[in-house]
Length: 162
Image (cartoon, rainbow, N blue to C red; front, side, top):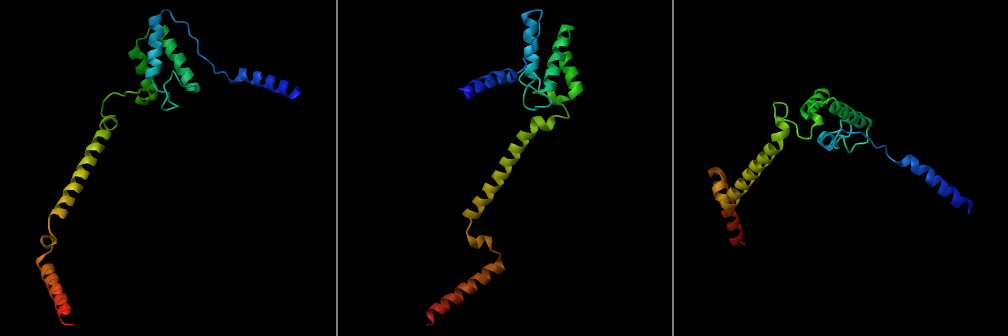
């Protein structure tokens, strides 16, 4: 019985530690709350790499949420906030980076690889069809054809002699 009580007390003590910290911010109105939510969901956490700032529990994500809230209270626009974070962390913080010279490979690289793969596949298919549709004689040079005929004739001679 003592073990059961100790286990229950230990479990209750640990549940207080297991709760995640939740950011609470006081917004002026619902529109500002929606802007905050939109910004934190559109921006990527620099540490987590594939999580947005809203969902990340990393300390840097907490700092970025706090910074976004501060800039919202200062009256900055969404573009100003995003530009500030891009200047500080690069285009990586955006889930949808702009199309420019540095991001062309990111945007068009997969399509280029797909087209390249289709071209290689087409070349392989065309070559196989040529090989399968042409008889072996057409593919042999004149010298090779003469040697083949000589070998076949000598083989036929050997079968007739015994």
